[in-house]
Amino acid sequence: QVQLVESGGGSVQAGGSLRLSCAVSGYTFNRYCMGWFRQSPGKERERVATIDTYDRSGYAESVWGRFTISKDNAKNSLYLQMNSLKPEDTAMYYCAAASGPHCYTDSRLFTYWGQGTLVTVSS
Image (tube, rainbow, N blue to C red):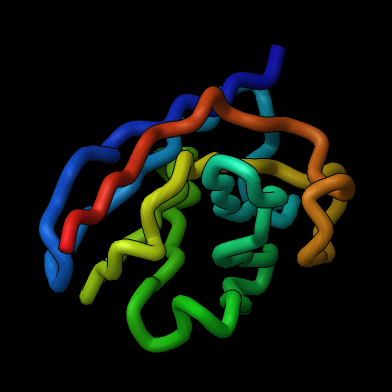
């Protein structure tokens, strides 16, 4: 059974940093695309960052230069380092795993999802 468990969310002031973690089990972690998505009330879920099996990463334009996605294959863990946070980054953040090695921006192409971790950025 595939399980994704996020942690590291919380409340922070604008300009601050947070590091999200996602522990993955029941899944051959290093063979598939992994990603972080976020969703705020009234908005669609959007891709934040993805990383493929060759460690090539992709980012939403809104987080480019501020967020960094990484993974540790030995620990089956995915991370998202978030710096220079802005109030508009406030959302529920989800870890997601695809069924293939290629990364996409469409959340519908990701098969497995965590329960989410809430990030709140105050001004």
